[in-house]
Amino acid sequence: EVHVVESGGGSVQTGGSLRLSCTISSELGFDEYAMGWYRQGPGNDCELVSTISRAGDTHYTDSVKGRFTISQDYAKKSLYLQMNNLKPEDTAVYYCAADTVAVTFSRLPCHVLKKEYTYWGQGTQVTVSS
Image (cartoon, rainbow, N blue to C red):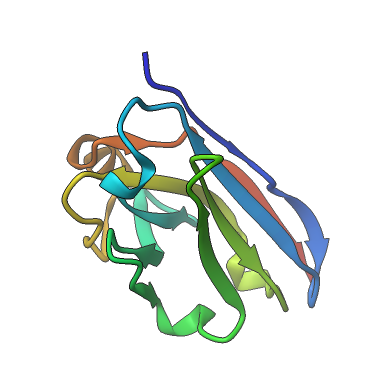
């Protein structure tokens, strides 16, 4: 059975930092997956925050460019999202996604995305206060 475990969420003030982690206990090599982070604010939709392709190419939504950094540790089979200079509008539940093809949908209802991707995390809450 494959487990996807997220951690690292919490509450910070504006300007603070958090580092999210996502570990996948899969028999496949970690480089077999494209991965990404989504977030769900008010409502049912999940917004794509950042992705990293199987080739290592990274992408960020405009609102987090220069503040967030996505990275991987193959040995630990872990995906990370370093979030700096956090703003109240970053408040959301953050989900990691992994797929053997690609992580590309920019915004869809979270329950739809959960079915689209090979793996979907349980979510971790990030709260940024002003």
